[in-house]
Image 1 (cartoon, helix red, strand yellow):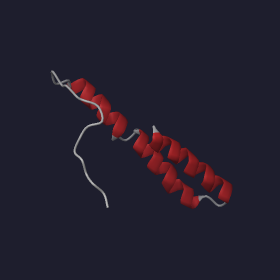
Image 2 (cartoon, one colour):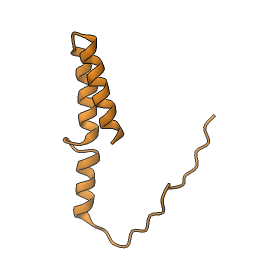
Image 3 (spheres, one colour):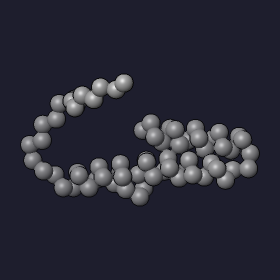
Image 4 (cartoon, one colour):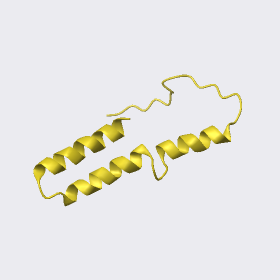
Length: 68
């Protein structure tokens, strides 16, 4: 059973809004050229690989992209 504790790992203190930084962070995490998008493309492409070495390679690359 899981216990959900709504607590941040590090304290956050936002003094002012910064729209430029928010747009930059969004593009890195959820935009079309983000790490998540790249990882999902690698995971999708692994199913079209004809050999097992290619599948393993794409899986490893996708795992590294998700870890960043």
